View: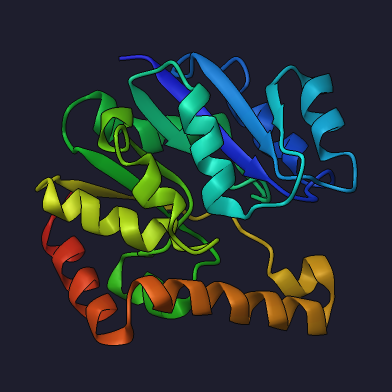
Length: 224
């Protein structure tokens, strides 16, 4: 299987370099595509300088649209989806996330970062993790459905897709990897507003009771 890594990015010039250093030239990754969602801080230039293929969007359309732009351009039969702001990501972490899917032990995998919310760490599952590996075929032919989702509704939708396909799911601990808070990146007020908007999008796709059911079903599909 060949692996395409897709990284949606918006104003991540300060952090995307560390993510790219973990995946560019990785023996398991055939191509790395950064989708720059109309960044204002030189994110695209950083990614190009390091050697990633960069797709520049003319207007900010949100994470879901950026992801699907990268998926449409990808050539591999396996997708590796990564957020652009990860701190502490290493090549070993990338290999660990891909291993269950490439070996056939699981149909899909997702990360459990070291700074994931305490609740997610206690139950052993971050159901809205942005770091995932899976077959690209799961998304083909569903572009219109996906693009109709809210800006941050993709992960909640994708979980239902995995469950509908009956995939076994591997949860891969990443104790040394962190995702900085929006407050840290944008300031307290803007970060709070961004978090509220993100959770609003997720709840539009998956109301609270449905989220609890989804989490229980994902845990039941976990492989060790």
